Amino acid sequence: MKKFSYLVFISRFISYLCTRFRKGNPAMSIAVGTVRPPRIVAQLVAYHVRDVGVGSSSLLYPTHRKSTMDRTDTPHWFAMRATYRREMKAHDELEEAGIEVFIPMRLVNKKVGTRMKRVEAPAVSGLLFVHCSQPFLQTFKLKRPYLQYLCSFERDGSRKPIVVPDQQMMDFIRISTQTEEEVTYLDPELENLAQGTRVRIVNGPFEGLTGTFQRVQGKRNRQFVIQIEGVLALAVQISPNLLEVIEK
Picture 1 (cartoon, one colour):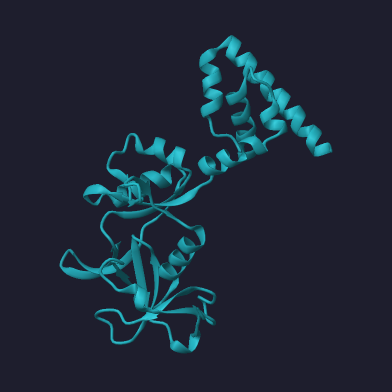
Picture 2 (cartoon, helix red, strand yellow):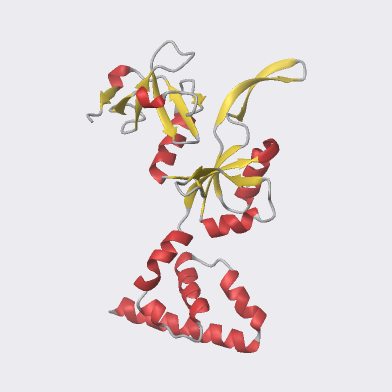
């Protein structure tokens, strides 16, 4: 009850401030809606900036807004492409804006001066994964036309940005950045990944991860494969002793 009363007090206080801002300085009231305060305050401000003049029912009964808020404000992992190999430029600008970003990397031989060195380079040209809410990401993209969504085609012919489930993305990042074995990146459209045996790693640093255990072109032994459907897959050698078959 105390928590409820506290929220009512905060809601009325913010409503009062927003009303004063609107009367005294219309430009200021717009700023209140665009600044990014801490999450709980941001949610409260969002309710009232949207509902000034209507009342405070949206805060007292937030379930009427919850589904919309969840869809738009929750950060997701978006698969994206930076044109003309500008993925590292996009990476730096996204990080500078406080947005989490991941680029799969691999070791390559590069001539530095007169010597060859092993250096990290993007595994797939132009590919990056961005963790952000779609409205904020859409605003970020406006001044960066080289940054584009990777999309899937829906049954009605429309295109929809590819969103990678959080756990799948975390598993992918975990094994691609922490394994000591060589990682091979695969194009899911070129590899027959559906033919592999579904397995789970039951021991070691990657315990709990699931994927397929199968033959991969160019590799002598069968590989443990994790894929992000329609985007990218990775293969790494895992001892069969660490795997258990997942029953269908």
